[in-house]
Image (cartoon, rainbow, N blue to C red; front, top):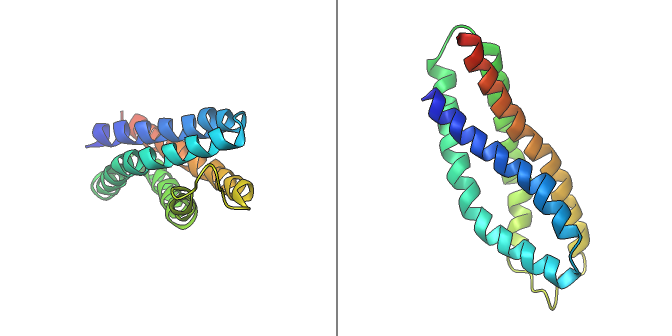
Length: 146
């Protein structure tokens, strides 16, 4: 279970890292209409992909936290805390924004669309960092056991 959990956490952290530091800067280089079309398309796709990784990763992290004892316990708790932060930032921050973005039209975006994107990006810095920290902590926990 630990290995499967690490694989899922690694995929989640990698996806979050690429969105944060690869996709988001690329979107900023586009003209407004292309940016909005691309952002809406990404939200439509990632609203399926991310929960598909997040939910089983969280479930396995909880199982590992509860069932595995001994060396690495502090790292597992740290990873669980980072994962909890990731989930909270997602459900209280980026998901509500994404629910608005999915209805944006490139020919008539909301007047505050740039501010909304900036708020999402600020939340995503913390969110992506939390995913990476969770992964690193669970890797360290496994390494401490060997």
